[in-house]
Amino acid sequence: MFDLVVRHARIHTVDPARPWVQALAVQDGRIAWVGADEDRPRAAEEIDAGGRLVLPGFVDAHNHVRLGSDDDCVQLAGASSLEEVGRRIADWRARHPSAEWIECEGFDYSALPGLPTAADLDRVTGDVPAFVFSYDVHTMWLNSAGLVKLGVAGGELPFGVARTDASGRPTGFVTEFAVRGLARDGQRALAERGLPWAGEERRYRRLLASLEMATRYGITTVVEPQNSLDDLALFERARAEGRMRSRVIAALFHPRGTSDADLQDFAAAARTDPWFSVGPLKLYIDDVVEPHTAALLEPYAGHAHRGETFYPPQEFAGLLAKLDAAGFQAFVHATGDRGIRTVLDAVEHAREVNGPRDARHQIVHVECLDPADVPRFAELGVVACMQPRHSSPDIAGPGHDWAAAVGSSRWPKAWPMRSLEEAGAVLAFSSDWNVAEMDPMIGIYTAVTRRGLAGGPAWMPAEAVSLETAIRAYTLGSAYANFRDHDRGSITPGKFADLVILSDNLFEIPAERIPEVRAETVIVDGAVT
Image 1 (cartoon, one colour):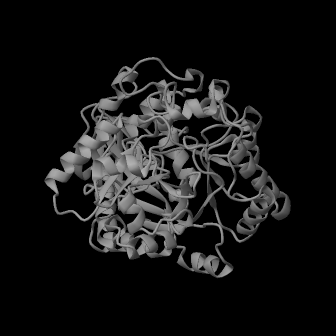
Image 2 (tube, rainbow, N blue to C red):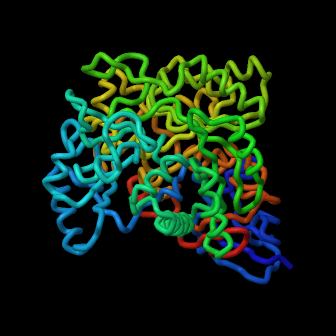
Image 3 (cartoon, rainbow, N blue to C red):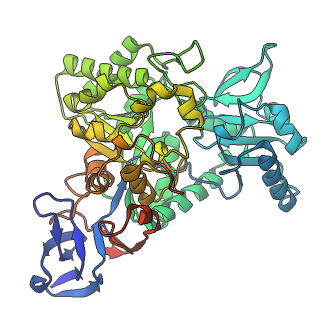
């Protein structure tokens, strides 16, 4: 007798050998049988799916569960003006009159023309130290008191690069926060300088809230892409306390200047565990498009500069070849077309030096890709780890800073998901929470429509993909991208029984209804969670 049978279902297995079945059986946490209802075996427990759609549990290939969203922060998502920012901060301040810091998150670059200053923030915060994270957490905006409290005088910092005005005074904006501020030294510096957001208990609360959210959305494996060795204890604590109900794969952050001793520590920390794995390395080659810190082949629209890479190309090629020879898998953040080409060139160099191997190096984001580089992903075995929601017209399209920064002539390069798929590349989809919504339904909707959540015209609709492709990229594609396609990503006998039963059949409803669909039942390791 089996442990569990799910019957009366529309089961999309994402297994090309048998893509659709009606029932499945689970034994000892794994799929043991799939087939027709009338042939189902006996089991200790049965779930009648009521004809609902069953999918493999989602594998979110790039999800900052440790960073998360913070309930103690003022939420600025959707604030479209400095006045609205001020109103939200004032409302929060009225509820927290004794707070020593005003901490905010979710600021949209498009909310204000140009980058505001510390003085702009002073008008709504007064003398209380305050910071605001941009929605992508790549930029920190500080008021005057915050600049003093964190010791920001201009130039390079442990947690970013302070922009300065013509007189050399800090403007209030700190860029490259995701590159430096989320690194080990940056986190320690912020905690030592008294920023509550960086404290250990706040970090743990964010992790728990995000893990709970992931399970609720049917995400049964989360890839946390950027961690220091110090952060691993947070996941171990969550696991020990029974709070990790979805599986986690953690990548370790490799900032520029990482030493051979650090690499030895990374190798020693690596583990392959069904619930908590550690191993890939996260690197950056460029930053982000909106503040013009991504590396482009041609100058930004209306400007003379084209951004910079964090490494000279030859140095990065040598570094990647070294990591590849040591057996590491690399997740490389690259958004601009020149940044992406630099990474592809480096992978090509590594293969020439070390010989080809099944490395599955990932380029993460792939926001602005030159057509000449599209076929190179498949040729070099590079996975395109992409976040469909970022391509939505209400985030990056006309009227928003991303589209304005690259200029309309480069819009056809934006998130070319279909072009990559047709060229044979492996797509791994993800949310990039908390940069965008974690819900896979929103990612799938955007991938198949290229429309905003409120509908309206599609942006670059030629790059939309089919529903089958989007589901595969959120399941088996992401499992493959992380060397886990042997035990998850499809409903195949022998794989983990990680499943989601949805409220509606995605294949039978209009695409505009996909964001309404919910994960009604989530099963991880054969148990309903």
